[in-house]
Length: 62
Image 1 (cartoon, rainbow, N blue to C red):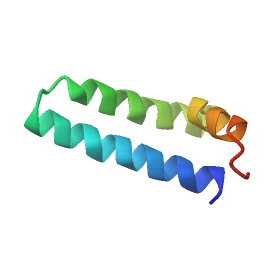
Image 2: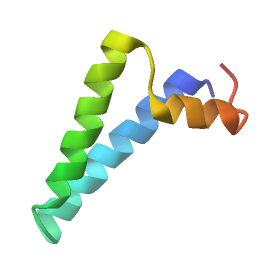
Image 3: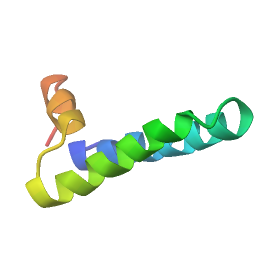
Image 4: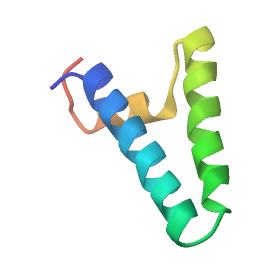
């Protein structure tokens, strides 16, 4: 699996997970959902994402 595909999977899991947690536990989890969305938006303009850097350092193929 490539870095890009893994990144999309992780972001999707974070968004779905935090929406479920916001529904079942606390609406404060939506702040994390917003953080993930903002990070995806900034990475579209800068072509840099902290999670991609982390995945590359962990040895995921590019």
